[in-house]
Amino acid sequence: MAHSPFSPTEKFLKWVEFAAEHPDLDELNLPYHQIGLLSYYCLDVIFASLGIAAAMIAVVAIVVRCILRRMAGLVVPEKIKTP
Image 1 (tube, helix red, strand yellow):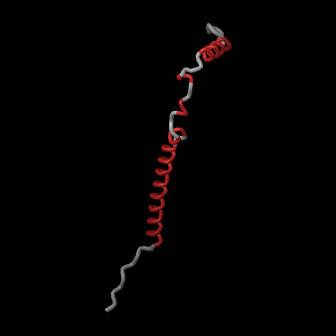
Image 2 (cartoon, one colour):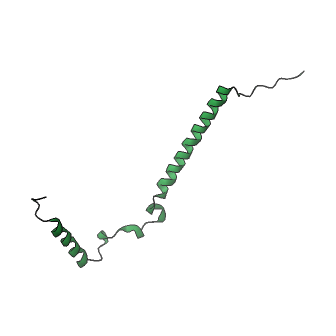
Image 3 (cartoon, helix red, strand yellow):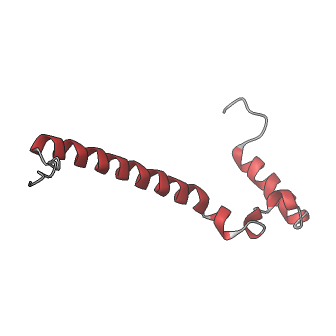
């Protein structure tokens, strides 16, 4: 830092002056007003993650239920035919 040609204060002042001289530069403005609500809040990523998590929970629940049924011997017995 001691060997840099400009001090942090000089750099800051230079950029503030540049922004003041050129207020309508699109490069300095964030494009939040140009993107939709879905992209702004990353709702597509959130919904996809929630869907994957729900599918994984459902698969785990089904597997656990099958394992518990087999362990408990709750397999449905065949009906005995009466003559």
